[in-house]
Image 1 (cartoon, rainbow, N blue to C red):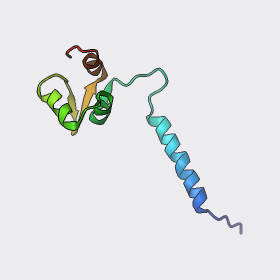
Image 2 (image 1 turned 120 degrees about the vertical axis):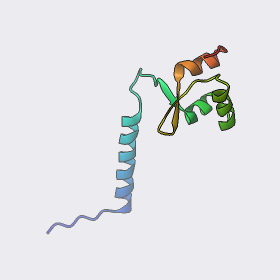
Image 3 (image 1 turned 90 degrees about the vertical axis):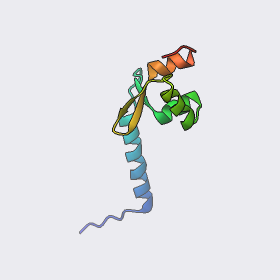
Image 4 (image 1 turned 135 degrees about the vertical axis):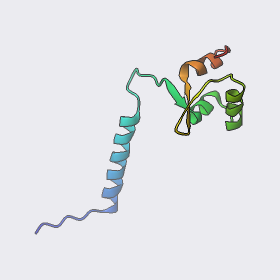
Length: 87
C-alpha cells in the first residue's frame, strides 16, 4: 500500500492555484471592456462615498438598473459624468 502525506504547504499551494484559476475565469478578456459596473466599482472610479452615489441616483444624475438587490451602472454614463456632461 502506497501512502502519500498532504502537508499544509500542499494545501496552501492548491488554494493559491484555485484562486488564480477563478480570477482568470472572472476577469474580462483582453480588449474586452465591462459595460456594467457595480456600486463599489463606481464609487472607486469616481472616488465618492456611498451617500454621494445615492444622491447621484436620487437626483437622476446617474441612471442605474437594479437586479436582485444589486445596482448596476452603465460605464458609458460614468464616462459622461467624468467628462463633465450629464447622462
